[in-house]
Length: 341
Image 1 (tube, rainbow, N blue to C red):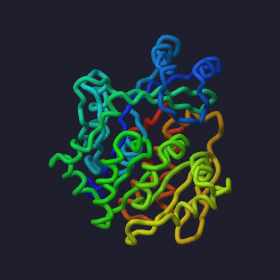
Image 2 (cartoon, one colour; image 1 turned 90 degrees about the horizontal axis):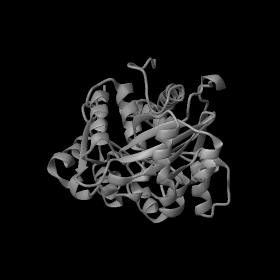
Image 3 (cartoon, rainbow, N blue to C red; image 1 turned 135 degrees about the horizontal axis):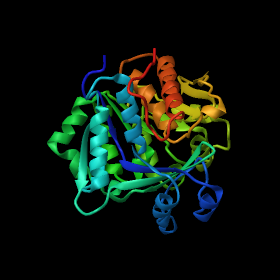
Image 4 (tube, rainbow, N blue to C red; image 1 turned 120 degrees about the vertical axis):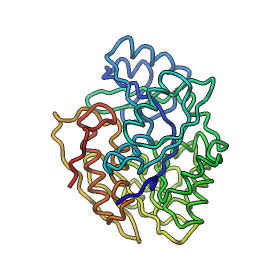
């Protein structure tokens, strides 16, 4: 069984403001489906417009936090997971704390005095989602918070670490501290490519972290962007997954494994110079509610088995189960208990 505090996540805690929108709204704000971006000036009015124009749901989100919550749900052992990130001292922040506590995650938020809790507009159309994140307080995380004894204790206690690529835009220094600790203590450090813009515009910090990463997660679009940015001249996801797994490593204890999801197509796993494909659970189109959180839930399910030292095939199966549950519900939400066998 997974022991207390075995898995630690760090990232951008955001409150998802989710609504089913129309094409006009997407075009007005120049938003593409199946993408994730940071909000510009032009996007700022959209949050207000969404709440006044559509029926919105407020759901605790942020990529890493979603994955940690799903792993926690699958493990059904309170406190098996921990999480750090920055929120504001406001109503949304309180909502986030309550939500995390109910989920059984041990959160150590850095609470910023003056900046509001970050939000993410989740625009849903025909079951597909687009994410526009206004980081606000999430952008204020500092490594000083991580270094405090009560927080560093979570790092010491954990054996597995997961950080979405989005956190590279906020605190690469914190990522490096945890990555180096993991390498020194032979623990497992994992990251996600997270979004095309991370691979394109945060290439330097991503490349600095990559040697420490034992498991790289991502989807097919992100993998292809990574390939393009690095001049690999291939769109073949299996080839790209292999190349990522062969990227030099800081520590030889664990070989790198690359796990790429492709929506309804098989999951690609590259390790030891070989690629394996794992089919996903098919879902009839009419059962699809929205894809928001699907990739996060896949990672959460995967991690729930990995921390129990289950084989990769089982980790992937649990990942597919997690994603399948989440896409049949709005946002990254789940029933009270999992029925994963």
